[in-house]
Image 1 (cartoon, rainbow, N blue to C red):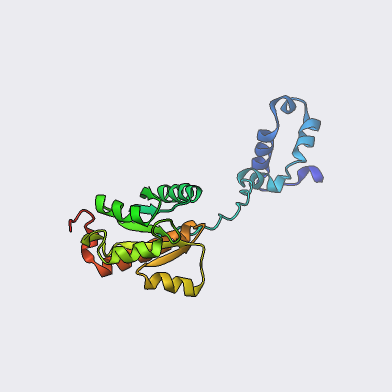
Image 2 (spheres, rainbow, N blue to C red; image 1 turned 60 degrees about the vertical axis):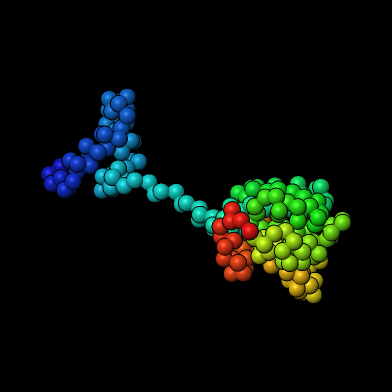
Length: 212
């Protein structure tokens, strides 16, 4: 009586799906070839196998965002550094951060440059010939570079990083200190602090071209 069994629901759909899966050359080779091809897709699950897309490949976790250095804005920086290599490295770091830079080699040249041009901030090497950074900063604060520059932001560049040394620089009138060789983030943070101190000390410094 096996010949009289009713067809299972979905058999017609399953057969159609299987025929759709069989390549054209194989479809014309008889029932044996068709049966062999149908083994790869069981009748009850053939439609589901066709309709279900393959799982998407797992994606690697996105890399953590790196902390950016704080930006004090595009500044006109006077770099006082007597060492040629140190001057080139620092200038490159500043220009890469979007600042404009003028370079001098000692404290006497710092005072002359401040009188001749407008700057927002001075990066002052502590040890320089003729006039060191501490003496130059004291001169600036006393108005030797012009009244408009008496409150300019000044940062010490130094190999001396002890708390005692730092306090000595602050007592001389500097706003902050950065150890050499300077790192990008540490330098940007010091520049931002120095600019805030300068604005608080002399608000008209927000107008760089203001005359004394």
